[in-house]
Amino acid sequence: PAIEFELEAPFSIDYHDSVGSTNDRARELANDGETDVAVVANEQTGGRGRLEREWSAPAGGVWVSIVTRPTITPAQAPLYTLAASVAIATVAREAGVDARIKWPNDVVVPVGEDGDYRKLAGILTEMEGQTDRVDWLVPGIGVNANLDSDGLPEGATSIRDEAGDVDRRHFVQRLLEEFDRYRTDLEAVVPAWRELALTLGQRVRVERSAGEVVGEAIDVTDSGALVIETDDDERVTVSAGDCEHLRP
Ligand code: BTN
Image (cartoon, rainbow, N blue to C red; front, side, top):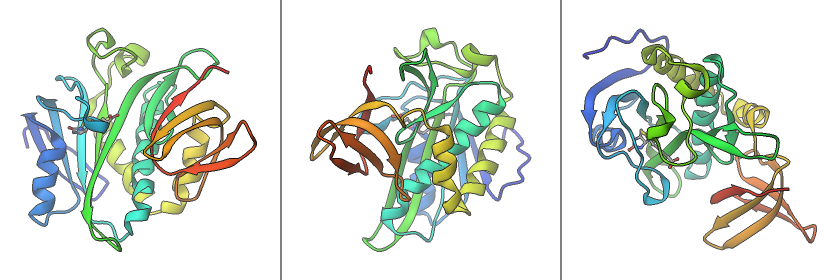
């Protein structure tokens, strides 16, 4: 690679100065039967976000997609993504940023006390498999690292703006170490997630295909689903959806 990585974690690095999307490159590697490869790019020209959104990914960010072949069922896949968000928040905190997690896996920095936030990082997980087993799973991680948030979409922040620039190689190394630690100890993921959560205790609105749910976010289940207490005291568990923090 053009950049040397010293890894404690068991991943090899597939480095690109510029690539369309690291997730697309990771998918190719996964379909070729590869595993435990971290695709890392300095810049992406076609970065992709969740819900078919574009993801701005200029040179200076941390853009990483990890090819894995976990022995889990598709129902456990959200835990893998939560593991990645815990890893990102942990390493961003080491860099001096007050990183927290907005359910399910946005890494954000709180603004004020009302549950307001700016987004520091996001994860786009893609996978292939059957109903009972996962063939491959790729968490695609985007962290606004050494970037001015001025040039980023509305509501975004960066490590540079919060705490100053980081050594991106070190950041990626630590990210892979933390991700490896949690993926090999999935039971530790939800407790760690709870410690970092910004969403718990917030009034939220979650949009999902079955309609929206509004109420107070009171917990996450062992599989990472959000438990919401609605205004008529019903408990609703949502496993996926777009979550918005509402003003109290
Ligand atoms: C989100 O919508 O919050 C998820 C953003 C995920 C962006 C990352 S950057 C590395 C990887 N490659 C992509 O094209 N997307 C993900």
